[in-house]
Figure 1 (cartoon, rainbow, N blue to C red):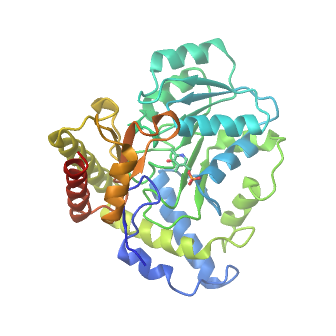
Figure 2 (figure 1 turned 120 degrees about the vertical axis):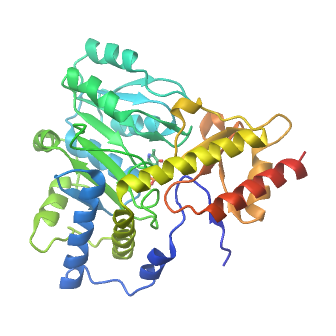
Length: 361
Ligand SMILES: *Cc1c(COP(=O)(O)O)cnc(C)c1O
């Protein structure tokens, strides 16, 4: 087995303490051991989502959590606004279309953040049932100011749905404090665990919307999931990814032991270190530094190089990074540094990148 270092914006590296629980015999999901485990996980997740509402665990990747939010909150033909700054904003829009919503998308441009004035204008003009926005746009390495966006939405009384798939547990997000109505994340990004689970929390207002929703759903029926977590012995409606639950329970214990404020601070220092090193090497950051993500760094491919060659070179030396998506393919490379990242991983990545640039020139 090759042990590559995943400097990718999901899946991310899994720390040894978490790997140690991954190889255990999974608990049966209708046993006291499982109820205890799941109850601890649920309470950890609430502390990381910063919410008093239930956090639901779905067996799917992050996209399944996004789909669950759409299927559970809306009625056919509802008007929603998607504020997109890249690939994942577009994905959320596509999901709303797949469910027959009358959604609009404002594209702020790949590499930009949401412009609050333009957002305000759009919300003013229409009666939207919800605003959908991405906290950390993984395709471009840009972080939106969700608190400021939620403040704009609040002025127009529009519920806010946040794709925090690549950000929750890595940068600040205060679900209750900021008045967010739906927050989605998954196991394989900042939560330092293997893929397999998505997590969704809804506000009171969102649960009321769920009462009126008429869109088809079965496996991703959030009311069923909520009945499960509210039991005295909490469980899931169907067999969940028990091994990943064991992993996320362990990983969230670790994050909470460090303390979320310290986690955010460390993550910010890592972001700064990566940006500084990239500039020192002579490369150009893709987004403006003021909106650059602390969780991944998108870098312009320098003249005379091919993105694929740099990625392959580094991969052959054990470091996996990724390229651009859609029209940014070939134009940028993306270095993920979210979740479990050590100085050694960063140094190996910088060395491999520098060697790629000199050997491929
Ligand atoms: C990774 C990611 C997703 C979901 O991806 P999955 O492969 O379905 O887990 C959604 N949004 C963002 C911003 C992401 O980074």
